[in-house]
Length: 423
Image (cartoon, rainbow, N blue to C red):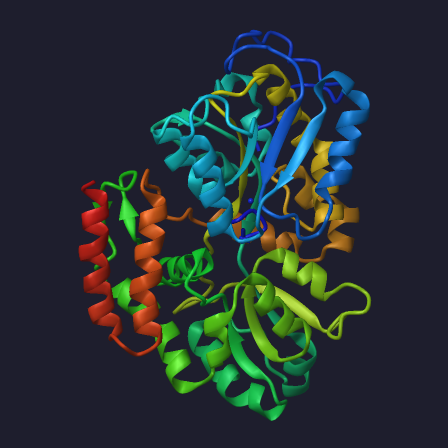
């Protein structure tokens, strides 16, 4: 989802050492050649400012392969628009390596904009298993996962402790506490990201998945959303807004706006990515030391998050594909992945880091996040994902604002998604 989305706004690491040498036994022409030289790396806006220093480390040790960082807007939708405009231009374009939302891999691969990569060059078993699927399309590997993500439920543990209640595990418990506990402390009950943008698609997918449903199947060729589960999930969100335990302001929230509302002490519960926990827990935050994180709730127990994060892909027309592969190896090495977490507050894809005692002490949500990632599901895979997401946003917004019932919205969603799938 955007790559902190992050998405939300987001590894298959080359078997190389940090000096940047190509893995033993790998062919120089795999992935499009071994040409070396300078690169550009395009990414959504770096909200925590960590990426520049990491690339400075690469540039110091690879003077002939220096990387220029190009930061696009921090909105996933705007970043997608700028990347696709550049890629459609043909020839080489501006970008050599692209840090893409995990859900763009299918679209970019189907369009021929990014290079297929040979799986044999990457130690897939070193990563959390679900992240590998985000980098594939039509049975082939087209990218290297860089960061992963899963939504968590953040909560005010000081408030729940005073009330003697545990963090909610079900929608009914969440709704009850948001209705009864939050008002006693002058807090809004629950919020997610409900502005019509990619974040709304994520929140809707999580609600549908948590109820046991799905949206698309078979790489986007089959529409599966017309189900009781989808009606239940969308109905849960619509009811919250109608009854007020989801504040109306949440209809204007993206990740940052919702994080600020929680960090400023205005919400009891918040669905967001782990970076929001890290930032809200930092020294100087009004709620530092008073928040906790648990898996998202569902109708009858823990729910299911959307798998977020980002993948690193190589432009089909990249000037120096060999350097691009070595840069990806550097950014996905265990040492740099550790810095992605400690400097950027972004979840790494290296499985071993989630069991590192020092990291768990510093980031106590890591075990919860690992569980959430392992049970997460990707957003609907489709070569027309951009259109899929826009349809979900438009239709569900009508349900959330009361212009359409959840049942009518689901039937309309099925019709409009079927039209997209037939393109």
